[in-house]
Image 1 (cartoon, one colour):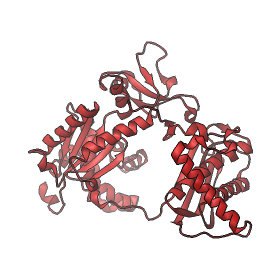
Image 2 (image 1 turned 45 degrees about the vertical axis):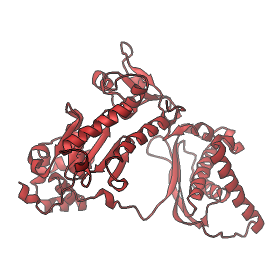
Image 3 (image 1 turned 180 degrees about the vertical axis):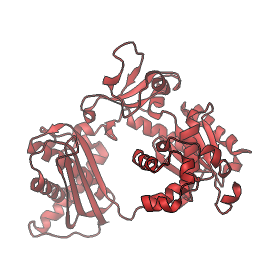
Image 4 (image 1 turned 120 degrees about the vertical axis):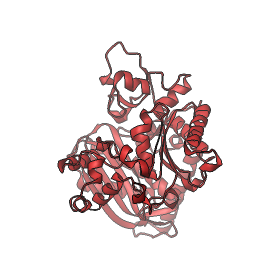
Length: 431
């Protein structure tokens, strides 16, 4: 089998996941073993409409009550006879613990060989460094597991592979269910590790829709996929067909240190409102608040925008609109707020609104100022200086110390959201 892969470059990749991360952090902070306590993290804030979304579940909570994060709600819990510990999210605390864990990883790899995939998952390219820490890849992986556990109390699962795809599948499909929370896949073990997998949407990069399309043409496992006509896959799936074929053979030529970045960058923010907004004045306040925040972000990065995008929608899929407008480059809050409102006024038809977003794109360096005909030069210069002053005061004293009076009106959410991280309670303590 190995002769098929003679031309493939082999690396040593660790895919590491912090097991039930949010729930584990909360369990450890309360003195519990994360694997032995039935604990859930519940958001009861406005972003879930008061229904109480279960953001995270401990291993025991999943096993005992069949709960799934981001799917189950408090209303789905057993009405009685449950011993679940329910806690509020502390996003700042999770970010802090995540930074501790990734600092441990940095002891084993250079920064360019570390890819932080999400708040609970990272990839380490150990090709150049693993031999410094042990006599085998498994030994080094166990050393990392132990160090993370002893310093943070968090259990980790590790997948090891000759490339990113093999490591990720080893972690997702096997390591999470193994006693030692570890598994290794190599090109030699593709037939026994990859090809028997029948739950296609459990495989990294194959979603439920793609899995259904594959099953519709008689592909029910990675074995079927690996031995299907690759030209037929390309005809039916386009470029993705070729990628799926390579995946089934465990081939992935990506290198972490050769990260690529999109040429087009944008800054934006979106929000799920605490209720359906029906009053124009309320929606205006919410849109202005988001516009102000995004304006401050592009100023922080010394940029101006030439493209404003506004989207508003209801809690379902119909209704609302998505519109954009090209403008003269600027980062002034006053100007951008008005453009956002103009787009809203021109397109809103009285729909109930639950979701809003504002994005600024086509960014250029903040190296000049284009004067307009409707304000004097002095007025425009003063407006820019005012923006800078507001930005500096908020940075020094906190956002809520200086807000517009409109944020206290019905519809305003900026003050409440100032304490949120990723849409959830940030928490106040790292203890």
